Length: 332
Image (cartoon, rainbow, N blue to C red):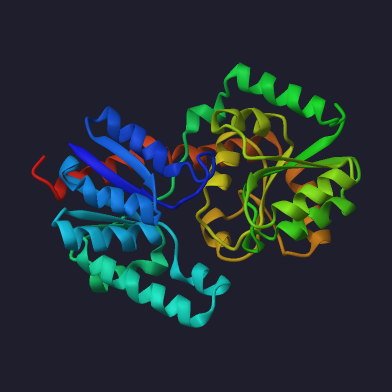
């Protein structure tokens, strides 16, 4: 079976979850071609419509473009709905957010199957979708729980070149550099963390202020995007991981958990899901610092509980849900 998957148009080493699912689908005999959603790739997908048996479209642009392609080509569509519309509405003008909501509703209705992550989206999805299944975000657990020695060595060598003292504690952030993730507050928190270094891996609209902070002070290191296979090495070198977004479902939190890295999580929606597995804080930099110190004091039992949480979210098991959905909309 051949599948064309339209994903968010992001750098290769950012938002890697869809690629992990595609790898597992490949092992199950489904040939997946991932394409970031742009006008060029949508046109390419239309021209090559005879080369695949099904479409998968990830919110937001991939799902909307996939619906348009499915309508024009008759190819069955699976919508991969991974982000709540609430997040888009919080960062975009209201008219645009309303237009995107309506376009997503249409995509749900035109899809043969919708997979969704957030329980808050269930009523909307099930109102429009002919068939829907709850899924989740996942983690390549073994990759982070037992990192490759080469990744550990590369990370340590890079941190040495960046001048990170061997006795410095490290707070790591991996992910998008956008206001939604309270990146500026995270930078300010290092003022309250004597003896710590903030390590930032990622890309986004706030790269410039992060880069400026890294160039102006010795306790901030900004590496941009790094090969995803090296991320476990950097987590291995850290003492705590930051996740300052009001979201109970994030890949970075699962990666921290699989690595046994104590996590600092923004207080809010995540509390009901994560319970006492992480140290909570508000967006105030001093509170972020206090939570970081609390997280770093986690004992072996705390770390084991966090790792057990991550083990329940392996990509391998989640990919089986995607396989069933894709096969259900085709004759394969």
